[in-house]
Amino acid sequence: MSGFQFEVDEDWAKKHNEMLRDTRYLVISAIALFVLCLAGGVAVWLLVDPASPWRLLGSLGLVLFGVMMLIVGLAIPRSVGSTQSLFDAHPLAPAIIADLPGTRTTLLALVNTTVDPAQPARWALTCRDVQAVPLTEGSVGTKVPVVAVGGQRNAGDASTWQVITPMPIAWGTPERDVFSDAVSAIPAEQWNTLRRAKDRLPEVRAAKNNLLIL
Image (tube, rainbow, N blue to C red; front, side, top):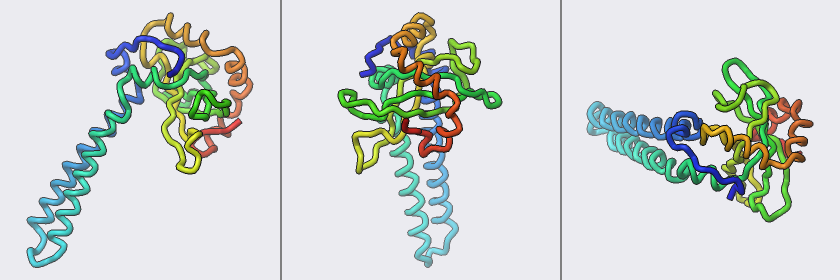
């Protein structure tokens, strides 16, 4: 549980939440790949000499690969969960706008890499480039409350997140009061730690998985 609960505006989230948008793109890509593999399998079956062993192997291999990609693509939304569950399940974290490269916005966040919230925190910096963060002025240094979505663990160290993705609270609600409450709910010590580390963005970008342990 994040410890900070609010009601997600689903229509707003569909419009602004780039994590959901990325998920939709993955599903569309999987379906497109399935169609291409199916067409390729049919083409191999029709065009390759019936006496060639590659006729069966090629067509069957393409179709099976396409089906596998379709299954994976359709399973992605279920594994990600609903927008509400994403915000509810992950811890609140501080982030700031650290850079404005071109038309994009770079967030720098202070996150806890320890999976179990009952265990001592192991702090790290991570970054993410996004298109926009609603409810902010969009200037460098602006505070952006996020939830830290843990996405990958190593088999040898299941107690530590290897990848953490910041997801702004503003992607889930248009309510400025909720945004302000989220800023206030984050301890001042964490905001201060992040502020002192604001110039370490190049180090974070160079770190594995954009995760720099402090």
